[in-house]
Length: 129
Image (tube, one colour):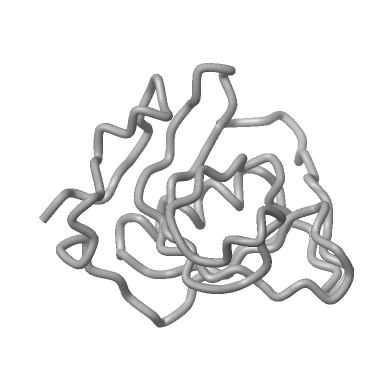
């Protein structure tokens, strides 16, 4: 996803960090390749919302041609009120992402499917085993 100029996607009210979409995507790819959890903030999170901790499994494109991330949320804010479980995240909503030292292991997620049905194209994914 090369851009001729940086496309700033926003910043967090807790920590004013500017990240380009390219930086966000590269961080997601690195996290998937190293099986490292990430901390994520959304542009529309309410003030004081707990940062999400996600195990990122699949980066791809959905049927609406949006860049999406399939991940398992361990903790943090959720608009739905469901703070843990599988989530399909619109990458365009992410304003800040950070790798953690917490690793995840696909074998602990037997329901994981690298051929995600929520996506029409897969960019990168954690291998099943």
